[in-house]
Length: 161
Image 1 (cartoon, one colour):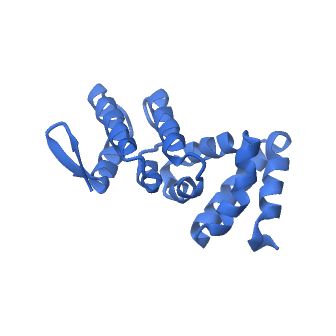
Image 2 (cartoon, rainbow, N blue to C red; image 1 turned 90 degrees about the vertical axis):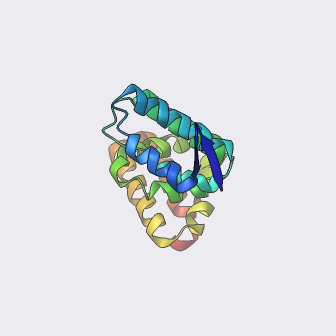
């Protein structure tokens, strides 16, 4: 599928590459291209593209506020479906902190927490293991706040029964 950005026609992989190359957000032109690319990807309203968008996260970015725009974009096109968000998180090795921010936002929503075990059960093993590792890390960092929710998630997963 092709999409026009300016005078160019780009497919989703090319837009993913733009997000990756501009994710440090070091210049105003990087920020503008990054934001425009996010908007273009969102215009497809395809939750599968969350995986491509996750490539655009980077822990050492120069502009966290703009990076939060990507969090909101993922939440917007993902809607009630967490599956593609969880698949995408596994691709965020250079953005572990952003992965945890996404998970914190889910863990702070009781309705979202209820969905997580079945989503986790549907994930490929490598994605499931990575998310479990992140959840355990979050639990260790803020036991009082998140242990109950994380224990619920892990206890409800079929793979743990």
